[in-house]
Image (cartoon, rainbow, N blue to C red; front, side, top):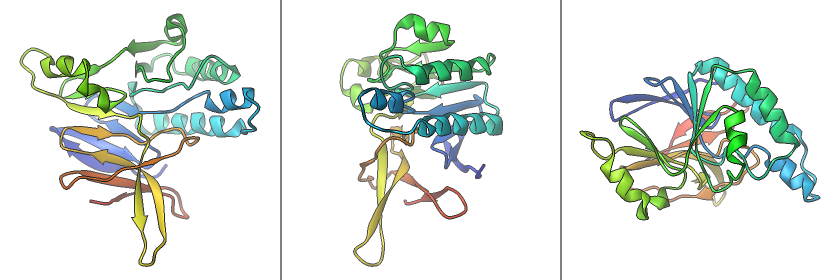
Length: 234
């Protein structure tokens, strides 16, 4: 397991893992977004040949992260699953049974369309729009703050001001250019003044190029020969 990169914000200690998630030390919480479990099975049902090993590798990577960080809970910022039930979600249920004491809290994403009783049987606590925890709040799509969720976010908790938001949905990527005309795009963590956008945990996902602002911090996830690593871009 490659070492995580320390990042501090709002008096809280975060550890950015090159395996596309972060660990919140004070709350002993592993924060992830856009796992899209079941996506490869969904594509196979549609006749598109995607090897099941892709999904199993994501589950094994999550297992390794749990063993490494020893979190008390997973905070999933949307799209834990990709679509309706399939055989891959049966595998997830068996995986889940191995961690009966691990809490899972899910802010529903646009792909999380399973029945409510399925989440209950899997021991997953669901938040429909926004999850607030102290200085932080979690929402799947930060663009939703422009709508009705904004009032909820502003009101917060009595005596507590506007939180710092963590979101997903965009699958952010940053383009790194070489000395010539060549360039490569990598998944990244984006930290702006009021919110962060997390990389997609699932490897069977693309990336959307972002243009970081002057006050933002961006951390690219690079795949060197010896394993993935974190590189701060700005």
